[in-house]
Image 1 (cartoon, helix red, strand yellow):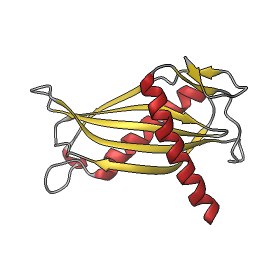
Image 2 (cartoon, rainbow, N blue to C red):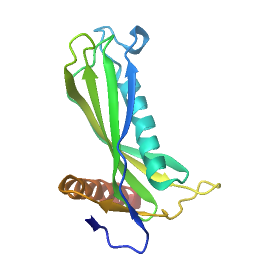
Image 3 (cartoon, helix red, strand yellow):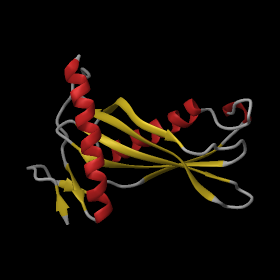
Length: 162
């Protein structure tokens, strides 16, 4: 098992699931889910994944690379699955997959993927160091770490240009 070299204790990031039903008030003219409603579920799921990983106050710093692949229809089940894939000094990158499911058939399909950058903060809202590092316990975790690192670095360079 690998961990990113660091003095902090390394822990495995748990996968977090959030499930809901798509109601008529969450859909557009085509009776498919509004993207903003899907993003809200994704952000909440990402926040819970980050909180369970670091057990520190966090905020969303940015959303990155959200790809809407397939629509989620009215009355379908929506399931968001989130996991921390990168842990820096004070920031995390959380990957969220969103699945749609016809409840009468049970066909689970990947509909949306997105990445959320979260930052651990103190009571004044300033970034603070994470208490632990990320343990990369399998090949998928190691591959996703590189994706998260790329997203983190892109966000950092964008922030530094301001």
